[in-house]
Image (spheres, rainbow, N blue to C red):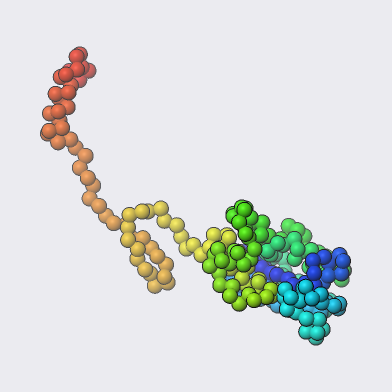
Length: 225
């Protein structure tokens, strides 16, 4: 099962009021495990960069001016995604921007059924807790020390690790056997060796049989007589 974990950086919060995508980062995961297949691009939004947005992701108007527009990267982006599911943290936000950009260029939008929202998954698993990407990295011991500012590719790579943990983590197997000792194999997989124990005797002793007979004789009209 192959899916695309992705993130975007934008000029603001609302594409319908002129905000645009300025960065896309994608990582393909296979059976929830991150691969080395990535897609990353900066995008010229063809507009100014608000200071509030630049403070979040560090991308200036001057820097982005030298990069391709969305119309120039859309073919490569769509080819990379193919027909795979799209995984994002607060997927509604990222899908809204991507779909606005594609619709504006006359391309078919990604249906909502293709989106998997890790924020919704985290809220179901940890109700009432903080479920930001940073909080989830801390909960699952995912190293996010390089995340000084938001960056689409770095955030997608971190989210790929978090997504794996949300879906069960790197569990190689499950054993319900409690008695045994661990054996380390060559590939670091831990197996369990069952310890053999001799069966315990269950027959009554002579003392127990004598006490049983004495008890039976004490019962009037015993069924055993």
